[in-house]
Image (cartoon, rainbow, N blue to C red; front, side):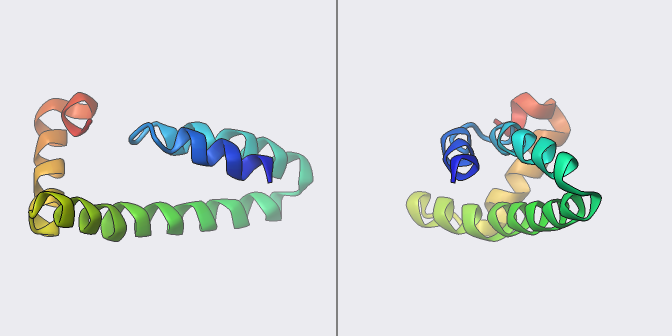
Length: 88
């Protein structure tokens, strides 16, 4: 669907891309029904958690030969020290 194409294109932008991608889906869900908005929030949260905590660290770790926990620790530390710029 068109929403999937938008999500795929914006997902290249780290951290901000998923937020941009979900905006049209939120608008459509709001127009459709409040229950649809709830389902959207649940699915988006689960997808972001799985991708951010499991998939990305695994892929980065295999390509860079760094343990996934090290990557998560570095991201958390950089985020705490330098904010959004540190995470990017």
